[in-house]
Length: 257
Figure 1 (cartoon, helix red, strand yellow):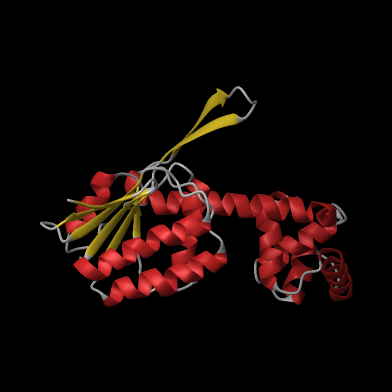
Figure 2 (cartoon, one colour):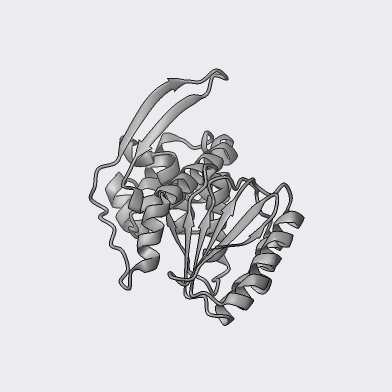
C-alpha cells in the first residue's frame, strides 16, 4: 500500500511482510531535498513501526556530503531503530561510486544500522525474509571483460562476479580508485628512488630486521641505514605500513636484486 509519494520518492508499506519499501522515482537534486524526503520517511516510520525496510536505489545519483550523512544518522537512523527497525536492505544503484559513499557512511560512522547491499530486489527480499544470514562463496570465479570503447573514447570494462557478493565488488572499486589516487599523488617522489632503494623497500616490507635486510641484499648495516634514511626523506614515510603501501601500489615485488 502506497503511503507517500513526491516528485522524488515513493514509500509503500507491506503489512504482510512488516516492511517499508522506498523507491526513488528520480534522484534528489540536492542534500536539502534529500533531508526533506528522509524526514518524511522517518515520520512515517515512527507511525507504522515496521521491523524491516528496503531501499531501491537504482536511480539515486546524489553525492551525499559528510554533514548530511551525520544528519541522517541522528535524525533518521537512530529514530528508526528506536521505533523497531531491525533489518535494512539496499539494492545497489547504477552509480556505483555514489552507492559506495552510502556504504562507507554506515561503516565509518559506526551506524546503529548495519544494512546489507544487494544486486537485485529479489535477493534483498530473500534476505529480509530469512532468519539466518546469507553465506557468500568467495571461491566463485571473477571474470573481467573488455567490451570496447564508447563514443567519448572511454574504455568499457565489464566485471562478472556473483551478485550475492556485490558489497565486496563495490569495495574493490574503492580500492582501485584509492590506489590510483595514491599513484598519481606520489609518482614524482617515487621516481627519485634508485634501484637499490627500491630493493631495500621490498625487503623492509617483509617485516625483516635491519641486519636481515642487509644480509639479504649483501650490503653492510651502515649502507642499509643510509639507504633507509634516503628513502624516508624522498618519500616522506614514517612507518612500515607506508612502505608496504608503496611496494603494493608501485608493484615493487618484481624488482630484481
